Image 1: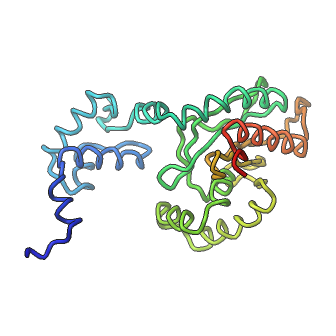
Image 2 (image 1 turned 120 degrees about the vertical axis):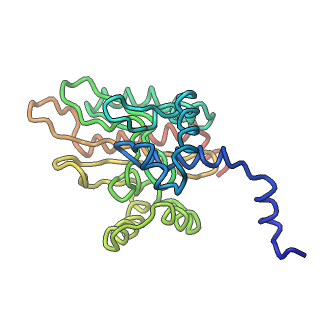
Image 3 (image 1 turned 135 degrees about the horizontal axis):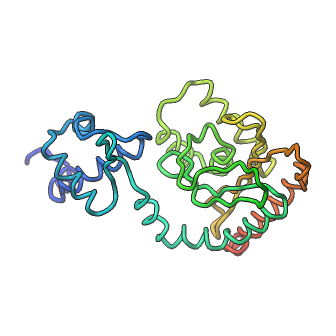
Length: 263
């Protein structure tokens, strides 16, 4: 007996060091807004620069990362986001929601975005703009701290305790008051069926967010309107009207995803 568990034996049997290094680099760069140099990457991953260099070259060749000319820092491209969108559930979700989102944006003269939970953050997977000259938009592919969003509250409010515990682990360290305020909001959001809250990042924006359910009754996405009141007189729908139409659209998208089919 060597004292090793079956899991440890399996881990050693199926080790793929090169793949692990490549994934480590992608995961590291995913959390760096301004990219990192080769030396910085090697230091943070506790690797030597020569082995990191080989991985960087392969990832560049495959189009997953790129090196900026002005400072030689490496950063992610949009390829990972594009690959994720080839995954059938996300592709189906954006396909079903896209036209409905654009119609609603035109009706209420507000922009909106569709978001999911990914690696403990809110990931924007679709964004549509209204026809007004002035818009408030969230960048497609943006990854946002769940505590700073109405979307995050909607996505978490219907989770069971195990799912919520797992999400909180993925989020990482946050100030205790911010953490608790988020958790305290969840029962109220679930009871109301939506989240309506002042933006925590932009003054004057009221976030309206509602859940989208799949056939199993799970919340798979949140559709959010960063509602703004235009002084030019082009605000065609009130907050109440916008909220009602948003909820109606999310219910329709949920129905098309099969929600309620087995209830």
